[in-house]
Length: 406
Image 1 (cartoon, rainbow, N blue to C red):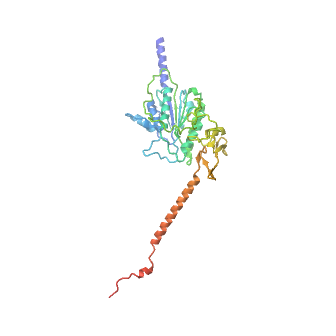
Image 2: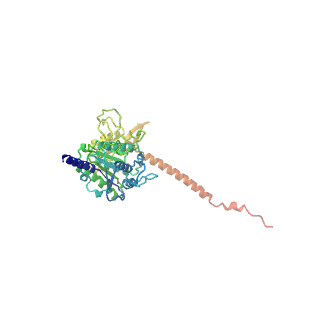
Image 3: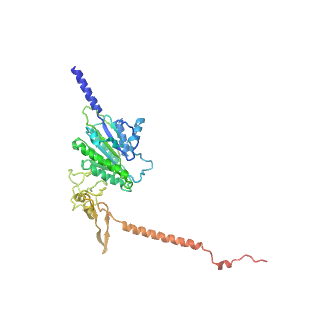
């Protein structure tokens, strides 16, 4: 009887462990028709769906895909990439990926799932270490891609909003990739309460939905939330639980421009990290006035943070509080005067860190001169054409006559 009870208990434990699955909730501004019953997919299929949603399909190949896999990619893969480039008008290309490990109750974080576009589960979810390796590889793939066109700065504004919401939760592990992808990865050791996560996720969801109501802003972005259960010790390990994929072969040539602070002097290895996960340097504000590299936010929460991140506005201004915004500090640029050949030469500066020269006046002077010259040439051609179309004087016509009658 003892053996029977032990066998029953072990069977119940195994079935309970097998019933634990990862949950994926997705939101797309342009929702697609999805199955009513959330399906359960394998970790490899989940990886392919995630790669398509993040625009990384070129690193993930399909070998003899089944009809079920193709249906899952069409239903949950997000917007399709166009053959001749993307042209979505005034729409943001930003994407928020939130990956939470060791989640006991997914409903405590996600709340009402009907607010999302679709959801599905991941059967036999891999361990947290395997998931962390996949996340790092996805980041590596995204970093190797070129920047996307952002003529209206909608992707940039969306990225700043996403980062502002996720960065306070875990400042040392929030990645901002390629100015369009924000990755947030947390686990049980981070000690983030489910209510805090639920509030931040619901705020991001409401922010993206509010962009649909405003035709002028267009700040909408997809959101992918992955909630993985705690790992079990008796689970069978696989060398590649998420399947195989490719990684960029060449080194990332954009690594240096992506730094938020310029690395001008070697420092110790205990440096703080920036919101993008890149180590920064503790440099004195009075000594470092070089122009910072990378993309800076529109405003900062404090004057000290603004001065530090912008390197004292590159030495061309100072940080001040913007009118009507109590928690927004930005650089106020000042013109610099320099004597050249005994004459004063004034240079105007612009940009979030006053690091760019304002060339609007020389540009308009050059453009105006070019338009004026083009107008003179067009007027001269028009005058010559009108003169050639006039009739000849009658005196010339009188000297030409036909043969006389006999």
